[in-house]
Amino acid sequence: MASFEEARQWIVDAVAPLGAVEEPLLDALGQVIAEPIVAPRDMPLCNNSAMDGYAVRSADCRQPAELRIVGFLPAGSSQRFAVEPGCAVKIMTGALIPDGCDAVARLEDAEETQGRVVIRRPVEAGEHVRFAGEDFRCGEVVLAAGTVLGPAETSILASCGRVSVSTFRGPRVAILSTGDELVEPGEPALPGKVVNSNGLALAAAVKACGALPLLLGIARDARDSHLEKMREGLQADVLITSAGVSAGARDLVRSVLAELGMKQVFQRVAMSPASPTCFGLVGAKPVFCLPGNPVAALIAFALLVRPALLKIMGHSHVLDTFVTATLQETVKKKPGKVQILRVTLTCRDGRYWAIRAGDQNTGILKTLLHADGLAILPMERTMVSSGDEVSVQVLRRTAAGSST
Image (cartoon, rainbow, N blue to C red; front, side, top):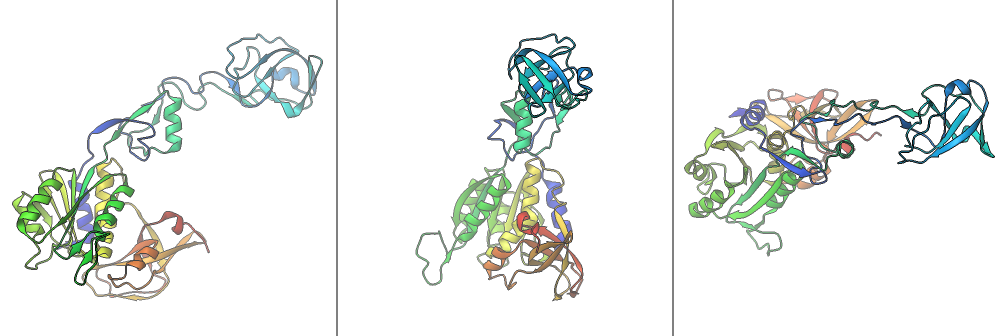
C-alpha cells in the first residue's frame, strides 16, 4: 500500500507533457504555452499620447501659458509635425507625439479659443506620454513557456501580432465504468440497479481540468466486455476506470489490465476514503482505477488524477496546491491512513478556517456538493484538535476566498 504522499509523487513522476500543437488564440484559452513568446518590436512602437489634449513642449508650460495651435493629430494618423517653441498640437489618445514635444496637457487643463490654447497648469516633461518600449522591448521574452493562457496573455499575444500559439496538447481521457448493476442516466433505475453517475461526474472533472473526456460507457462483469472496452480506452492518452478494483469474484479490472500489459505502480493508497485506488502504466500511458463509490471516486480524482492531468497539459507545481487552514472542531480518526475530510472554508483576518461540510459518510454525496475543500488529516494521528492547522486542497477558490 502506498502512502498518500508517495502515491501523489509516483503518479506525477510517471507522466510527462504531451507534444505541442498550434492553436488559434481563443481555442488555446486555459491551455499552457509551449514556447517562449518574444516581443517582435518595441511596445509601444513609438511615443504616443495617453490622453486627449495638447502635445506641448514642457519648457513652454512651466507656468500657465498661451500657445498657438499648429495642427491636429487623431489616433492612427501618420502625419508628422515639427513643433516650434510657443506652439502646440491638438492630439487624441494613441496618436504619435510630434517632434519637439515631450508632454501632453489634458483637455481638462486647457481652454481653446480662435486657434490658440491656454494651458492653465504647469506641465512636466513626460506627462501623459506613453514612451516607446515602456511595456516591452524588442526581443524581450513577454510570456515564458509554461504560462497558462488567460485574457491578459491573449491580449499580449494579439499585441505581438499573433493569431495562434503553440500549447501543450490536452490529453484525451477515456472514462470507463464497470459493473452489471449499472444503468446509464435516463434509463429506469429498477431495484438492484445503480445509475452510472461516475461516468459523467468524472468526465466533468476531466473537462474542468482542460482535458478532453471520452465516455466509454459500461463494461459488464465479464472478461470479454472488459477487454473490449479497455482496449478502446487504451487508444486514448489516459484511461480512468471506476469500480471493480477490490478482491471480489467479479472485480476484474486489474487482472484484465494486467493482461493488456499494465505495469502496476501501486494497488492501494493509505487514505480514507478512496483507499482502493490503483495506478499503473501501459507503456508510458497512465491508467487510474478508481473506487466505484461516487464520493470516493471524485475525491481520488481531485487528489490523485488531477495533478497528473495538469502535468500532462504542461502545468508546473501541480502538487503545491494546498492551503493551510485552522480546524474549528475536534475530529477523531483511526491511525494508519490519511483521512480526507470534506470541509467548508472561510477566510478571516487573512487566515483560512475549516469546518466539516456535513456527514462524512461516503454515501452522502451532498457533503461533497457543499464542500469548499478536502482537509488532509495526518496518517498517524488519532485526533486532530480544534485550533490545529491542516492542509486543505481547495475545490472552489471563490468560496475559500470569501470572508465572514
